[in-house]
Figure 1 (cartoon, rainbow, N blue to C red):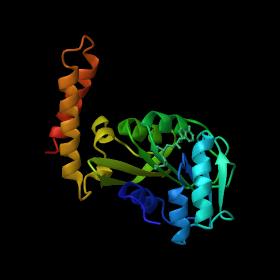
Figure 2: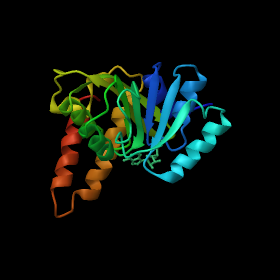
Figure 3: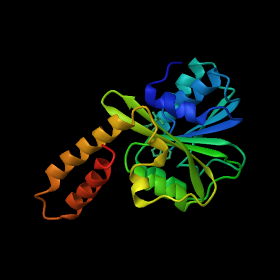
Figure 4: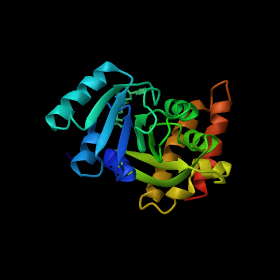
Length: 219
Ligand SMILES: C[S@@+](CC[C@H](N)C(=O)[O-])C[C@H]1O[C@@H](n2cnc3c(N)ncnc32)[C@H](O)[C@@H]1O
C-alpha cells in the first residue's frame, strides 16, 4: 500500500511496535501499511462511526489482514482495553477533539501516542503536557498546498515549554521544511488578521497579531 505523505509521516513516527490502535481509522490505511511492512503484528482499527468502520473492513479484507486487524466501534480510546495497544495513532481530526481524547483516562500499556491534528496544534501540545506526557518527536509533512504537523509523545514529566514553544515547537526547528512552514503560517495569520480586523470583537485580530509576532521571529 502506498500512503500519502501525511499518512506516511504518521506511520513513520508510529514505527515498529507489538500492537497498534488507530483511533478514527476511517480507511484503515495506517494499520494496513504497518502490517504489510511487518512493523506490527496486531492492530485495532477504531472509529466512532459505523460508515468508516465498513470502509476499513473492506480495505482490511482486500489486504487479507482480517485475522490481524480488529475493527472496534469506539469514541476515542473509550473501548480500547488495558494492554491492547502499545502505540496509539490519532490522525486527521481537529485539535479540540484530540485534546478531549488526551484528557480522558487511557488504557494501561500505552507507550507511545502519535497525533496529527488538523487544527489547534498549540492546544494539543499543551494537552500532552497537562496529561502527564512529553513530546519525543515532531515532523512536518507537505502535501498539496498544506503542511501538516505530526507529534509523537510518551509518558513523562518535566518538559518545559514556553508560550512561544507551544506555537513553534523546538522539535520542528530542524525540520527540512521549517522555513516553508513558517512562511505558510505567517501567510495564514495575515489573511485571518485582514478578515477579522474590522470585526467588533477584537479578540481574534489580537490573537492573529500575537501569532504573527511569534512567526516573524523565525523569518
Ligand atoms: C478525516 S478522518 C481521518 C482518517 C484517518 N485517521 C486519516 O488521518 O486519514 C476522521 C475520522 O475520525 C473519526 N472520528 C471522529 N471523532 C472521533 C472520535 N471521537 N472517536 C473515534 N473516531 C472519531 C471519524 O468518524 C472519521 O472516520
